[in-house]
Amino acid sequence: MTQKKTTVKKRKISKIHWPTVVLILSLVLIAIPTVAIGKVLYDAFAATGTPLFGNRYDLDLDPKITSEQLTELESKISAEALVDNVKITLISASLRVNVDVDDEITLEQLTTLATTLYSHVSSVLPVNTYFKMNETSKMYDLELHIYNNLELKNEDSYKYLIFLLNSVMEEPLIQLVSDPKNPEFVEELYNRLKDDVDEEDNGG
Image (cartoon, rainbow, N blue to C red; front, side, top):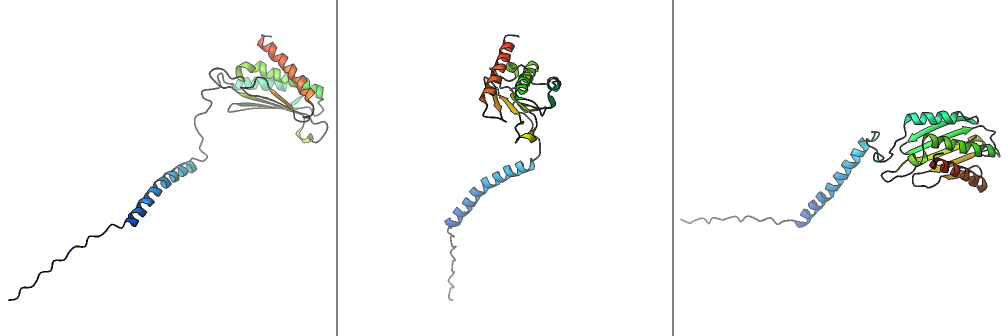
């Protein structure tokens, strides 16, 4: 009797296809940061229009300007004869005072009024207390805008004066926007303001 030969099939050992493995790993490595960035973008988009709590000035602005002080300041400025309208805004750490004055105001009257308005600000909100940086915190910035009529900006009668003072400035920056070629006016007004500040420092 003839014996049948038993054929043993050998298993084929599959070889690792390294290019495929490298491709898969590369895709995974790319996908991880892509998903992370996508989540950040989605969270940012979802949060659009949502108010942010906290304030970068929480550790600064000490003492803080109160609504009562702003009301008092507005009342003092409004009482001036040449003032038609006043608007005071306090946004974050910037106090902006817009003063619309009589259309027919002269440069001499503007000089006197500007000095008076700055005195009102410093009487309600002492400059060294509220607008000067101290050892522990930054303080407020001040913008004082005084103008007769913005629609007159191309006319000779146009008057527009700006005071700028931030907490790291020693003295306010004064700019006569309507006549930048008039440094004498700025110098005269600066000297008046300096005298007022000196009186404040001396308790006058």
